[in-house]
Length: 137
Image (cartoon, rainbow, N blue to C red; front, side, top):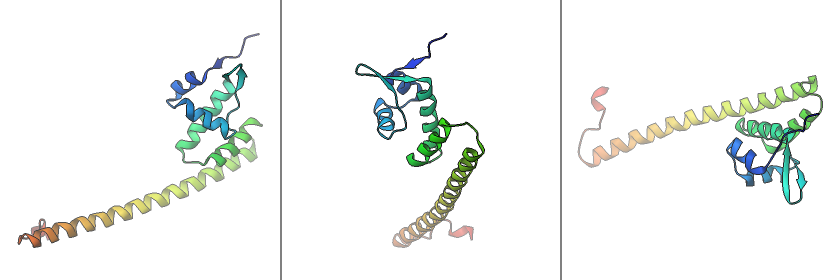
């Protein structure tokens, strides 16, 4: 029988490029549940997998509540129909939010461009010059 590999908080922090404080935060939120050896936290392979899933969820822009819900399903039967359907709903909603954000960014960039052009024209008028790019019309 092989002994399951364990990890320290420092090892996981280094591996995933995050701080031990972030890992403790996920513990406080109930997303990770390491065992204790005295005062030290001991993380099992399960904790490492859960941390990877937490960070993936954060990259996708999911809330901690959504991540927690998905992790709860992960603890049950993996790739069950209800789990996959819920994940599909969560991802579709995230996609919708991100597409709206993209549209908003494009609109704001257009407004910025207009304001920049107005500034150029006003500065040129104040200096008594023809506006830059006026000959391109």
